[in-house]
Image 1 (cartoon, rainbow, N blue to C red):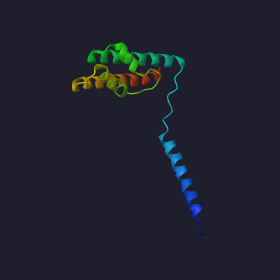
Image 2: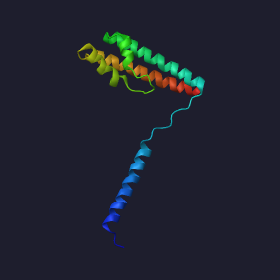
Image 3: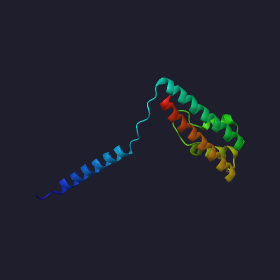
Image 4: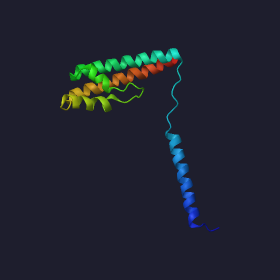
Length: 127
């Protein structure tokens, strides 16, 4: 059976659509943990405390007031790494780049924040 040129293109489009659907399904995030209201409230408080500690540490390291840094940390539920939001803003605010030591300390503070939140998520699931 000879295929017409239009049929080959149609099959390619179907294959491309299937491949795209498969790629999207494979890249879909793992379903988030469902917490009961008590667990969710506890977790929200733990996350807030971790964020507050990070802001205080960043203020102490950089010399920029904590109130300004707090505005740069997303609070709408997005878990954006502070190095993507805070470090560039700190450099703009100060008008000069962070030193390697400051950057290292801020990245360590960020890692502490992340670790605290991950621990809290694990504990919340068992509370």
